[in-house]
Image (tube, rainbow, N blue to C red; front, top):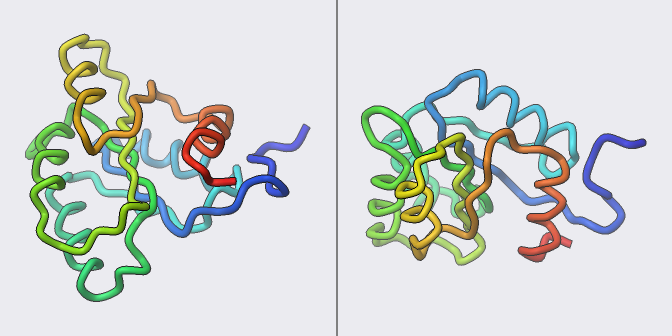
Length: 145
């Protein structure tokens, strides 16, 4: 059985960003995404504020390089995922509609999960770890086919 998203029926996304303070989680998620063939370009940020800065920079310098998908953790120091979403929503930059945010978290706090699901910038809440099957579901549901 091939490890990966069915490449014949799914196109690669240009770029994916991971925003999670957990280095090991970023490494595992990045490996899953790259091995699946979903994309070749994965950027990881351990600080949500730095991820926002990079999104702003790219939107002005090279908008084609903006991530099509952002996998965002909820619980992080400095700026948590919900704060990131609020700041992301306020950005006055030309962010293309194709930039989709998915909460990727191990949070079991019902209040946090509900807030994430209800945020207008969140496409879906996904429990860690990210798997190839979950990537296939994203492909099917969000038009990466």
